[in-house]
Image 1 (cartoon, rainbow, N blue to C red):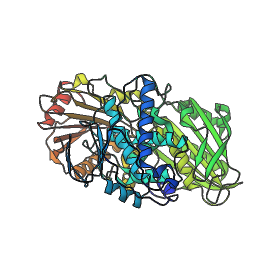
Image 2: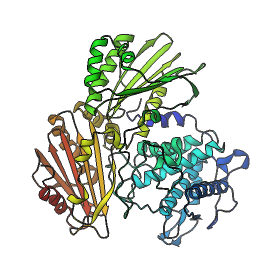
Image 3: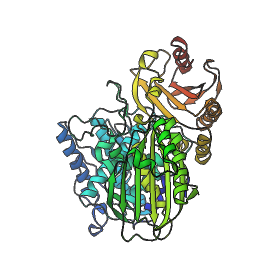
Image 4: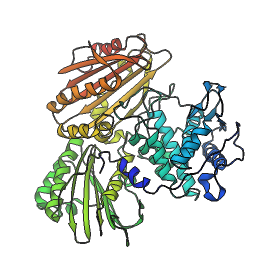
Length: 588
């Protein structure tokens, strides 16, 4: 199995790919006109202009239900060099949205090539992504640092695809082509999560964002619509998007709703499994499954176990390597440390009770162990994955073959929803982040996020190595806050400021992580060692030219905490970092 768990879904879906179609030109227009590509008998995905009309109607209805004004974007083919409101463009420009013109520009030749190489739904995914940028403009969102803005557009494209699927408009294989398109246009591994504007996210990020929209609709994309399409209470939100002039936006402060994280209907590549049973285990019921119930009771109470939710699913006739039985359950503990201690205890207890052995599975979430072996009704594989203070157990049993692909997808279902969820980290971690009052005037918060060890590992040049090291160092949790410029930025020229906090099991783990994180960032962005303030237990700084000016980054260790402060701007960004750690005593 590949190291990147999120890519398992891509691999499974690509096995379902269907033949592609070709695309003729679509003329410049302010409102999509009737013009098709492909053959009509090839289904919805082969009717390009009908898709544009559907996209327009989809967003018009959402805006109408929200009581907000909607405008149709232009859709303009780049068959020859032209001048747009955003500058010159031509057939070599694949696709982009120009906010000045409120128009989507695309290369008809490139779309034809994509349709031939990937499939006829691929150009539609690209158009839906660019349409998402138009929607962002209409609601007042602007591009800020990092990949959040682009990933939200991926999510909005997924929301449209979900609506099309519910209407029965998608052909078999269309979702496969959408996934492949996101992967083709992903950023390379090794690019930091807070890379400059213009980056789109690595393949795992893009897939996760698209699938969030596909699974949850517009409510999964954190779009600030006024009245309609609002998420239910405690629902995990999508990626934060900077919105200068608005109040600070902290995503997902409330703890995740366990029921929302476990599906009531389970779709796997070989079909839908029926819901067999669901409920919430009591402490007495839970400990009865351990070899020593008295010990288990004491430990669970010490770890602050506060509840569980489970759902079991069944399929009567699964194919070879397909799961006929699936169990998904989530436990909540008092802290990430408690959940980290509980994970190996749960795995060891299952091995002892069922005669299973450890299995290699790769890193999911913040911490992972897998066990497997023969069950009375087939072959079992169980993954225990921790995300902050939550412990996830996914079990799949295949009557014939290996259920690895299915149990991977089951594990990813809750993890996708928790990819940026701040509610899974300790509130004390949020208290460690700098506030606007600590920073020089000219910056405002753009959003908070919390990412897992697996997501962070995928930003390193060697994700396998990074994941293994994070586990060896006792990765616990991570949280970050971004700031963007108001006007021209600070007096020292800083236009982007990011703070990330990583917590490990002990000071030794954080100390080993410091040079690894620093050197990986320096290599990815071609930065070099520079002088910086001497704070905390140990500190190192790097800097150099990047898109947007000069970057200064300071890594500081304080006990088991690793702090990264990054400032970017055309002036002297290190001066603003020094002001933060000097005047406020921050990171001391």
